[in-house]
View: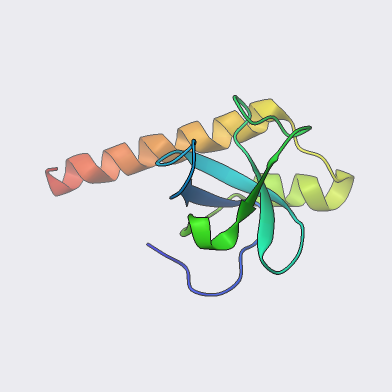
Length: 102
């Protein structure tokens, strides 16, 4: 489930370290090669994203094309869209876990 390589805009991540540990967020920007900006639309809004070290994130195989396109076209994404994408991802994870019998 982990992507090796560099993070992408719109990629869903799992936070490993810090106050938001074990929560999911979306990459909405880059600071440099070591830090990214993440937001979840709830606690971390797009206008005030969290600067996070890449080493403290688990990069998941999910990249939201909706978020990526919105960021590339307008430079912004709505908090509602971030919440929608994360809820959809969470539901798909729960569904897959049920299918596996977990």
